[in-house]
Length: 333
Image (tube, rainbow, N blue to C red; front, side, top):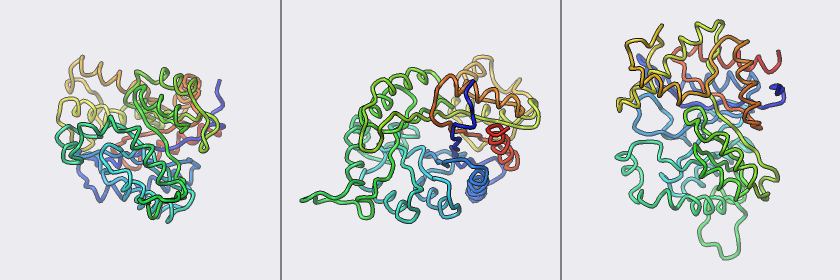
């Protein structure tokens, strides 16, 4: 069985906005969580870009990364990820060049290819959306070049940014980014916490096709999963119902704030809806510390991931802090 003590744990946060609270509460909770997991020894704290969603407050991702980095001391802070089709590569280079200058050695730049929102909002974000995803490899190359030392005759530079070599990651939920990350010699992160279908195929493709680069000599793969830990299995299952409800609401086209947990989902959703959410959240470890340890060991064994990223959209902040605390404890117990 895989030795969890040898695998770094990291955190993906969406800056959730629970029902009955507001965005200001969400930002306070996110910083409190970052400080908490830093003290527990987690390696990274990433924030994800989403737009036009009342329950997720991390839309201005670079700004929130700066807030978290300024409020912590040692943990790496980054994007999981910035959705590059929504942005000019130069602007992203300048933003993350600024972050890396203010917080040297602590900033990661994870890049995604999806818009992180609906079609209407995507058009509001970037007018040339029709070709944005097709241009992704070119945009990644352009962004990477902005972080390299300046070249003779280079007319456009990222200031700040040039020469900083901010670590780039490619994120994905299918095979596309796995293949591109392997080709470019970049670390790869898979979003198995909500898109389980291609996890193993993507990791295999990435490892088999990896080409060493100046940035990375060997493949490095991170896999993300949901972890809901509590003192008892029953309490963990209750906490998990918040994200289950949120996922069903999203699929119904009615996304909202993160709902409070319930004792049962009976009557809330149809059998078909419950089957759909069970499949989408397949890679979720929910239970007491003993069950969490077994689940994390099994996931690590299955994926052979170099790093595990845990995410927990839990309604109650105290329970969210405790969940990450219990998960960290299984590494040393």
